Length: 98
Image: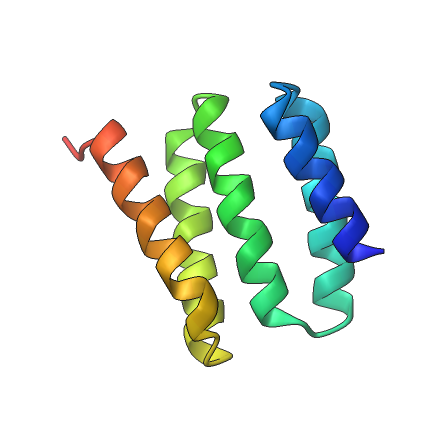
């Protein structure tokens, strides 16, 4: 179910329906936390960070990336690390620190 919700969230995001995308990704993330699937949580947090940025919640977006990074590192989930770094770079370039 967490995978279905993740991909529904991605579809909503691509369609520009950020509130619905956030809802589905948050639900998927809750399930993944319950299942103790930190790499999956980290992957979802990247998506939630992009959504937060799209909703002008830049501080939230960067906090989500930091959490994703910590989870991926703790889980030795190297596959998600590139996505996390790509998102961090994109979000930082879009909103440089002042």
